[in-house]
Image (cartoon, rainbow, N blue to C red; front, side):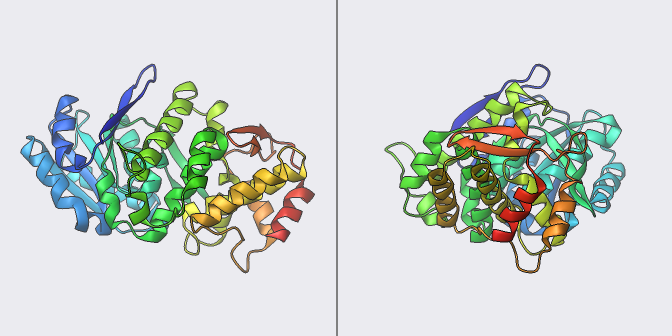
Amino acid sequence: MSSTINLNLPLSAYEIAISPSGLDKLGDYMNALQLGQKVLLVSNSTVFEHYGERALSSLNAAGFDVCRCILPDGEQHKNLDSIQKIYDTALENRIERSSTMVALGGGVIGDMTGFAAATWLRGIKFVQVPTSLLAMVDASIGGKTGVNHPQGKNLIGAFHQPRLVLIDPEVLKTLPERELRAGMAEVIKYGVIWDADLFAEMEKCKNLDQMQYLMAPFSDQESLVDYILTRSCQAKADVVSKDEKEAGLRATLNYGHTIAHAVESLTGYSVVNHGEAVAIGMVAAGEIAAKLGMWQVEEVQRQNALIEKAGLPIKLPAGLDIAEIIESLQLDKKVKAGKVRFILPTQIGAVTISDQVPSEVIREVLQNM
């Protein structure tokens, strides 16, 4: 079932189109936006092998002049070296201010393509075609772009909104189960911070970590994955439309991410993936909120049970030094006036932002994990 969510921003409103077989209509969607003729398609080797030719065929059939930049797969390649490769391809193929970059891939490719588009010729148009569940429900929406610094995640970046987000749920059929579970972490996040009904519906589901269950009918009109995509994308659109540049409300989308980014960075982006780190971060944030008397223990248990149902970890990776995690928190983008800001739940469907979390509470929670 196709659906469209409008993200209404004063200067850059755009559509999030959820369209089965939408990849084959990419050229038509872009033609409707009256974009320039030249297109630079950015993908990674894994995704391009599955879907690159379909994307190219659709763009060529619609009359676009397309070149490509295929990057290595993996978070460890989310750096300025990869951005340089995109720039080199853009220069070689004379990508102009009227041209468009298209991101075909997961969150890493989307973030890097968006950052390259934001900075090439001081900013050109780009389109997001996310191929992972995590990118579909989170990374592709809202205009956050960037790359990692060796000492911290996403420290280099820019806000640059896409002209279109085109989501084809059918491409999830080739998504590895570990990546599916990673995306479910972000879906659970939306349930905790914004959408109690989404959270409750997921609690009713027998299985959240296998695609065959997500593709099964959820109602007379849609599958569970359709429901998850629509509710999650709507939640992200609602928040971003109210706070595009993260002045306040949008920071709540970072629930679980404060400790997650520290875990990812300290493990060299190779032990846990982003979704697994977010799951660990949500468990920690939930426990912190409970210790501070902000959240009921029963709700902590509900959240952690849902995380485990999705096949996600609730413990820290072995060998991490607690003192190093706490020190790494100071490098987080959300630090303000030297104080680490945590997103803490107050009930299922609502959170608050606090920079009054004592270090000893953080340490105790992490030691228990």
